[in-house]
Length: 235
Image (cartoon, rainbow, N blue to C red):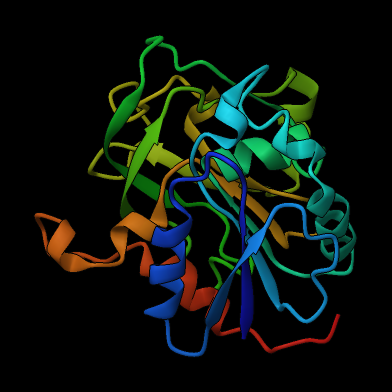
């Protein structure tokens, strides 16, 4: 499977994503500059974390106008899996590929820590190898990660099963102590209606090497191994 990792000016997690994908059997990643307008031949796309264009205006706002975005939208409409991680999630929201807004953390500070995620939807290309209710330990690192949607949109998102991850405490319970940024209903990741576009604030690429986890876990690999388990498609 050929996977494009789209690099923007200010991306700083692109090489981490490439390394995580290289460690995943069956995936061949390739860095692609954000000005590339033809992404045919790739089986999936990843928008990595960082500070694209310095996060000026709003996080992801300028990157969402990059030449590659129109191509990413076209491929997403054709069913190609698209993953946005942290700043990549912000870009997908700004580009209209995912709903809602990503606001300043409720504490108004940058938060960098390990968190517990609960898998709410295991029918996406990135979660189909996980069990619903499974708990993953994955780190976050963001300043604008508080997910907000108008009440009607939130209800529609919940009804359609498009909440993919929630922050929880270590026991898997949704609680104030387990919500690191004040996101509505502790939401950590959502998908589009067709479930092939996923945006998540936590960084799975930073949780694939057990050496980096005090508990010796590699829970982030669940995201990438699910992607590797898909059948390749032409586009």
